[in-house]
Amino acid sequence: MSGRLEGRVAIVTGGSRQIGFAIARRFAVEGASVVLAARGRDDGLEAEQTIRAAGGEATALVCDVADEASVAATVDRTLELYGRLDVMVNNAGTGTAEDITDLSWDEYRRVIDINVGGVLLGTKYAARAMQLGGRGGSIINISSIQGVLPLKQSAVYAGSKGAVNLITQQTATDLGPFGIRVNAIAPGYIDSPMMHGYHDLVSSSPGEAIGAAKRSIVLGRLATTDDVAGPALFFASDDSVYVTGTLMLVDGGSQCHGAIA
Ligand SMILES: NC(=O)c1ccc[n+]([C@@H]2O[C@H](COP(=O)([O-])OP(=O)(O)OC[C@H]3O[C@@H](n4cnc5c(N)ncnc54)[C@H](O)[C@@H]3O)[C@@H](O)[C@H]2O)c1
Image (cartoon, rainbow, N blue to C red; front, side, top):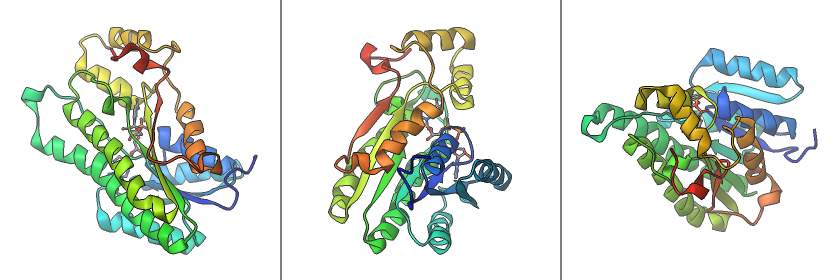
């Protein structure tokens, strides 16, 4: 442990697996007490055990980020358990892919409620707790490269992440006077079920689609979930104490080509 987050308390939504878990584990290694706010109780407990077994401090709480009472209760319980909140990672998200002419309104509402509503609610209750604490704080929104660059059949998902990017700047403006910084990370292609699921949906030959995706990445490989944890640590720690309202692309350089495959 190098202790860059020693004494700090963080909530990571969707913290039981993939990107969220990688961030939570890294924060714990750096000395933070981490709340894994996850929909599934079993997944959350397993993640909690993994972090504790490695010597970190973590607690899993069941939380639905699209449900206001659930988000409020998660922040309240975090304050009861650990007495403060320093970092909120609004990571929970969901994907979808559709041709615009087949848009399902129910699916639209599901994705927007989680990807946009979840960020707004997480920010609302974290910011309240941070304001009461009087020590400032850091809010980190997990966006996507698709909030910046177009990809096939992604109007709803891309729109939701574009909204996250603007909400990040907007809330950074509102919360700056309280010493609360708000930044976003836009991962590119993560080697994950979400990314493979997307390619299965939009391509008749997923293997080919993944190959094209890799060719669009300057660094020549898909990202691991740990590739996102380092930038999240930067935003959580005092290393970024004068950084707010930014969007950091963590995409291996996909944006250099101007469009992704
Ligand atoms: N996988 C990728 O290639 C990729 C790329 C760019 C951005 N992202 C974004 O990164 C974030 C994490 O994605 P991931 O790849 O780890 O996906 P994932 O599906 O493995 O993880 C998403 C997490 O969010 C949780 N979640 C979903 N709905 C929830 C809800 N209503 N309440 C609480 N938790 C909920 C899930 O249970 C899961 O733990 C998402 O915001 C996603 O949009 C992913």
